[in-house]
Structures are given as structure tokens and as C-alpha cells.
Image 1: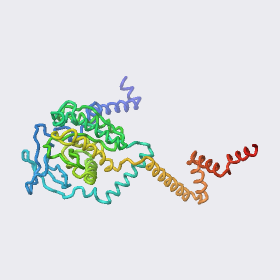
Image 2: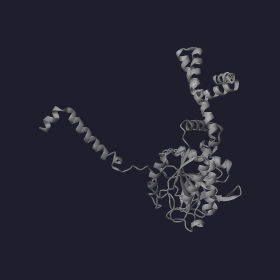
Image 3: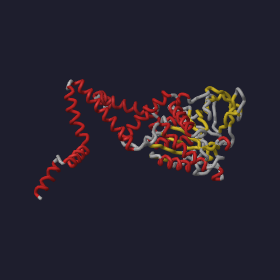
Image 4: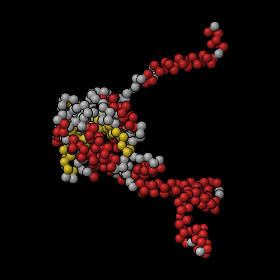
Length: 404
């Protein structure tokens, strides 16, 4: 009976085959549908030392120290130092990491005039679209290592709700002073283990739903204080360090953004950015092309030193993205002007293609701009009539005077 039913209804056989095939695909290739997320390479692991030690990076040619790092490094990782020299890891021997210099100026491209011109055009387009959509420019901030703290401030390098959240609050306040909307997550991702970035991934994804210009993961380093202390414009504060993961699909874009950020900081606040690590790991930076991990000082610098650095980086970062806030009236005026130009160009192109002639163009523009000006045009007309006495209101006033 069942065989006869299937033979008489071919569509039923096809439906059954489709359902069985879909099920096999879901339990096979599509394991994500069953709640098993496929994690990107470089997301799971210990990317910072947890034994209290650190590595010393040494120039293999001169045996001179380049920097210190608590970050776990691998052959092929690179580091751009404060002077913008780029070093590549060539060998590791215990706590000594050997590096070789591969560039004397790793930021040359971002300082090139042609790059600046391209960045300017992109910034103009962003500003125009932002005004047209009435969207306030936004920054998103969170902390993967929720426990990180400053010993001079809290007496410990680690606690349940770390001092890094105070740095987040300082960043938020500084960005808001500059007219930006700020999305902040206070989610706690403890413990600081190999799964920390897996836990913070959902936080990062949720923040990106609000389409921020930049996504910042706030950390602090774990090397000696001398690596990070500096004085800028008379204030003692902590340097910052940028980290970009090598194991993510947006690594080129994120690295270029980090370079642009350092180049701008070097120009306005020399010595603020200690360097840029392009190191093993993902750091959830595959989620967006403007994701950056920023280390504010080290466990031996104070919270106050870190928050002072937050003030300066909040000043620099928007400018390096081309999103520095401008007066609303000026931006709106520019946007309106360009919209009018584009409309006129479109009308002329339409006229040429359809052969309506210049008289047709003048008639069309007269109608459209009269409509576009709307109430403002009417108000201006009334004002002129009142000033000259030639309008309807002026005539009414003359009649009233005669009656009197």
C-alpha cells in the first residue's frame, strides 16, 4: 500500500528525499544549527603569560633590547616600536625572543599624501551619509579580561571586577565630550583563561549590532612600569599599546587602522603609543575591520595614569578614522549643498538623454526648487512684501489707513 502510494505521487517521494537530505546536512556539515558554533582559528588559547614573567625582545644582529612583552609570541609575529621600526620574530629561546628589523618606517604608507587624500574622500563620504541618515557616530567598548587591575591603585593585579572597567568609563566620558555616541558592555568574562575570548565573542557581536565606527577591547599589559611610563604636556601618564591578531580575516584592515591611529598620535602626542603588536591570535577581530585591542599601561602603573591616556586616545582615535566631530550646522550645510549639486546634475543628465532642452530644464528646476524650499521660501516672500509694501499685506495696510 505504501509503495503504491509513493509510486502514484512522485512529488511525495521528492519531499521525503528532501527532508532526509536536509536532516543529514544539518547533522553533518551544518553542526552550527545544532548549537555547536564553529570558532575561528586563533580564538582559543593563552595569548598572554600567566606565570608573572615576560619576554625580552632582542635584535639578533646587535643583541640590543627592543622591548619587553608578556604576550605569547610566535615565529613570524611582528612588532612596530615607538620609532616606527618594524621587527619580526625570528627565534625564541626561553624568555628571550630574537627579532630582526624588516623596516625602518612601517608607517610610511599611512603618512603618504595619496593615502591621506583617499582617507579624506572616504571621510567626506562617511560624513555625508551620516548627516543624511541623521546617525550619530558611535564607538563600542568592552573588556575581555575583566579581572585586570593596577597594583598601585588596588593593591593587586587581578580582582573580580578589574580596574580596566574604570578605564572604559573614562573612555566613554571622553568620547561623549567629543560628541560621539558610546556603546559600552560591562559583561564580565572571568576567568582569564584559554576560553576568555570565546566568552567575550558574544559581547563583541552584540555591540556590533549598533554599527560602531570602532570596536575597542580594553586591557592592560604585564611588564615592568618603565616600559609604559611617560610624560606628555607636563602630565605623567601611561603609554598605550595596540594589538592586532594575525589569525583573522580582517587583519590587513585592522593593522592599517592601528597604523593610522599611531601615526596620528605620533603627530599630536608623541610618545603616547608605545607600539603595535601584530601577533598570533584572533582577538575577535574577524568580526569587524576596525577592531583593536588597546593596552592601557601595565599592572605596575596606576589607574590615574591609564585614565589620562584615555583622554588623549579619545582625542586621537576619531581623527584617525576621519570621524572627528564638526559643528552640526557646518556639516548639514555641506551635505545640503552636495545633495543639491547631485540633484541638478541628475536633472541635466535626464534632460540630455530625453531631449527636453534647456527651457525644460529651467521649468523643471523652477518647480522642484520652489517645492523643495517650501515654508522657507514662503516666509522669505512674506518678509519682502512687508518690507516693500507691494504684497498683499502691504495693500491691506494701505486700505486700513484710508478707512481711518
